[in-house]
Structures are given as structure tokens and as C-alpha cells.
Length: 247
Image (cartoon, rainbow, N blue to C red; front, side):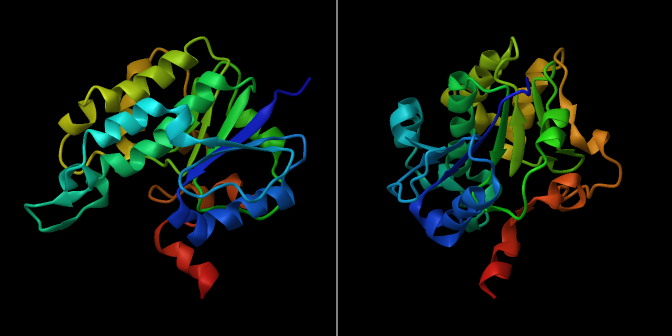
């Protein structure tokens, strides 16, 4: 029997209005009806109602996240650098914690064999290659990612094996990075999830992990998804690419 695949994403109202609504609509259009999308939302009440879309209010299912955020109202925890007098997104540990806690909740509560996490600025463009997704998230691997040499993990795309013997330990470790305050001890500009996810993985070096930078030849070291087989059925509109759909 094929291993069960499910998809997860997260967004707030601002991001929903910008791109995430289109993301959910593209999932409905292209994905098989027997595969679930788990949406972790803030502020924006669910409005696209389909049998295979499951909504979770992020701050309710991850109340410890909300408590932690409320303890850090100062602008410095939200990316403001007084020494530079500007916002630096890589220092915004609060913003990127939402993505991490959506994934850890899914890991701890999933009955699937494969979790595909897609950022809410992902648009599906064709029927997904499920055989390929199962291939790159094998049953004996903890997680699947692109570990970029300079920038560490590409976190717009991530995969998890919730049935792995250490899956819940992996989820707990990621949450610990935030709840313990460890995230604030990292060197300059490394509070974004591309680093916290990678640092979390470093605690599980004894586990098999699938690094797609090594698995595929010729992927771009900065923006690997468009130069990988994933581009056959999804488009990650990271950064300025979001402007392309509104041009």
C-alpha cells in the first residue's frame, strides 16, 4: 500500500490576502481529493471549505507559542536592529517561529507517512508527482530538505516522516530552540527558520536525513526549488517573485 502523504501550510490574514488564498485554491485544483491539506491559520477565518482541507487555529493548538510570543513584545525580537536603525528579516525570530510550530504540531499529530510542508507563497501548477515525493522522503529518513552551503535550509519546502522513531524528539527539539530562548543566543542574523531548522537537525546527526542538495545534481545553491524536479508541479514565489503574479 502506498505511503500516505499529507500537506501542511500556515498563514496570517495579511499573507492570506497577498498569496495564501491562491495557494489553497491551487491545492484544490491539482491535488488528489484523498490527500489532506492541513492549514494553520491566524486571524483569517477559513473560507475555502473542502472535505480534504483541515484547518487549525495556530495559537489554539500551539498555545505555548502564543505565550512565548507575548513574552517578547520588544521590537528587537521582531527583527528591529537598533545598531542599524532598520528591520532585518533574518533577526525576526518571532515571525518565523510560526512556520516551525505549525510543522511541529503536524509531526506530533499526523497519521500520515509523509508530510510535505509548503510555504503559503507556493502555487501548485500541475498534478503532484506522488511517487517522487515518497522517493525523496524514504521511510528510514527523519526529514527532507535543501541544505544550502551559505544560507542553510530552504524552509519554503520541507518534508517530515512523522512515523520515524525520533520524529517527536525532532519536533520537541525545534520547539525547545524557541521556548528555551536558545534562538536569541545564535550569532548575528540567524534567528530565521532557515537556521533554526538546520540547528535542530544538527542534534540528530545519527539519523538518516535526505539532503536534496546532495540528492540532485545542478540545483541552484541559493534558490534550489525551481531547478529541482519539484518545479514540474509547484512554484515557490519567494521574495520578489510574488510580484510576478500581480504584474
